[in-house]
Picture 1 (tube, rainbow, N blue to C red):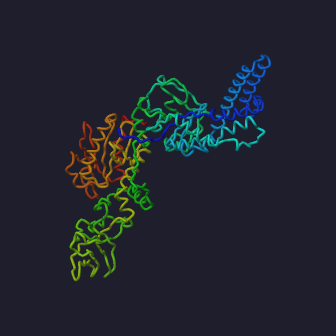
Picture 2: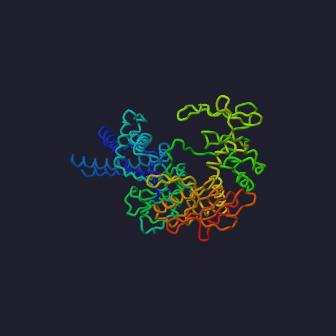
Picture 3: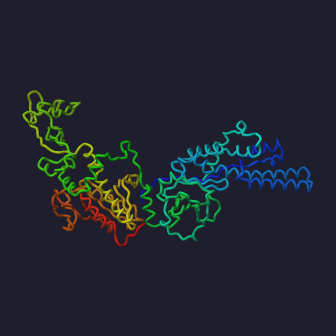
Length: 588
C-alpha cells in the first residue's frame, strides 16, 4: 500500500496517585494519630465514600475494644485500616480529578478521547509527542491537585492553607514516571465505521463504559469523523484478549464509530473496501508538502463568479478558443461576445532576438511612449547590448530599437488575454474546482452513493505522487488526474504512475480504476487509443473549437486507463454518472 501517516497517538498510562498521597497521609497519621480518620469530610455527592470510611474505621475501633492486642498486633491493625482508608480516599480523589471540567481545562487542544478507570488513563491524542504528553499530564495533576483534595478531606479546619505544604514539583516527577512506563502506540488509522469491518462479536471481549468513565472532545473529534456524538452516554471497549483493564483495549466503539487503539488494528480485524476508502478520505496516505511555497489555495470572488459562469456550455465553448489556456487571438475575438469582462485587450509581441521562446503581453498605450523595455542586468554570455529591446508605438505600429539608429522589425498581434486573477486560476486550479463541483452535484443528487476527496499527496518509496481527485462509489476507488489541456505526454506519464500504483497496492488492485480527464485536448490525442464516434465524442462539436475525446489505453494486467476531455458542465456530469454510478453499487 501507499506509505501511511501517523494520524494520532494513543497513550496507555497508569498514574501513580497513591504514590503522591502516601507521604502526606503518613505525616498526618504520625502527627495527629489514627483518630484523624474520624474527622474526614467529603463533599455531599461523595457521602457513600465517607460512609464507607466511617464503617471501616468503626469496625476497627470495635475490634480494638473487644480484642485486646499487644503493641505489635495493634500496629499491624492500625497500618491495615490506614491503608484501607487511604485507598478509599484515593478512589474519591480519582473520581474528583477525572471530571469533564478538569479534562477540558487541560486537554481540549490536544486530546480527542479519554477513558479512565481507577488510576489508569487511556488517551487518544492529536499531535502529542512524549514530551508534550508529559507536560500535559503534569499540568493536569497541578490543576486538579490530588494532594490538596486529600489534605482538605482529612484536615478541613485548615481551610485551604495547604499551599506551603504541597510540593508542586512532585506532579512533574510523577508525570515523567508515568510516561516512562506507558504503552505508547502510533496510530496510522482513521476513525472507522462499524460497517468497515466484518468480525463476529464472539472473536473479541467487550466492556461497557458509562459516562463517568470517559470524556469526549467533540471539537477535535469533528476533524476526524462526521458522526454526531453529542449526548452519548455509553461506549464499548473491546479486545481480542480477556478484559484485564482499560489498557488492554484494542479499540473503542462510539455508537457507529470505531477508534483504533493499537497500531496493527486493521491487520487484527477483517475489513472491507470501505475501510480503505475511510483511510484515503481521512488523510492516512496524504503527506502534506513541506515546500514553503505550497499554500492552500482560496478562490477570490472574481474566480468564484467565473466558475459559476462556466456551468454554461455557451461559456465553455467560448473558452475552447483560448490559445495556450491564456488568450484569444485576434481572429477569434468575435467568438467571446458577452465575456469581455473576463479579458483585457493586449498586444502580444514575439519573435524577439535572444528571446525566441517568449511571448510578451502589454496593454495598448499612447503614441510615442514606451511599450516594452527589456534590459539584461548582466551582459555575460551575449554580444548584444544590455538593453536588448526598447519597443515603442509610432504611427500605430511597434518599433524596436536595438542600439543607436538601429530599428528591428517587431512581430505583434492583437489579442484578448484573461485578466490576471483569472489567468493563473484557469491554468492552475479552475478545472479541478469545476470537476469537484460536478462531483458534488452528482453526490447530492444520487443520495451520497459516491464520495470524493481532492488534492491527495500519496507516497511510494519515499516519492510523492499528487492525485487530483480520489472518488469512491462503494465498489471501486477511482484515481483521477485532471489537465487543463490534455496531451499525449500527460497520458504516457500518468500511465507509468498507474502501473506503479497497481504494483504497490496489490491488496486492492482489482478495485482501483484510473481516469485522466482534460478540460480540452490537443491534436496529439488523435494518435492515441482506439476511438469511436459516439455520444458527441471524437467528432467535431458545434460552436466549439475542436472536439471532445474519449478513449482508453492499457495498463498492467487487465486494467485500463480511461482518457477523455470534457468542458461542458452538464455533459461531464452525465459522463461521470455513467462511469461512477453502476447498478451493483450501493451506498457505503
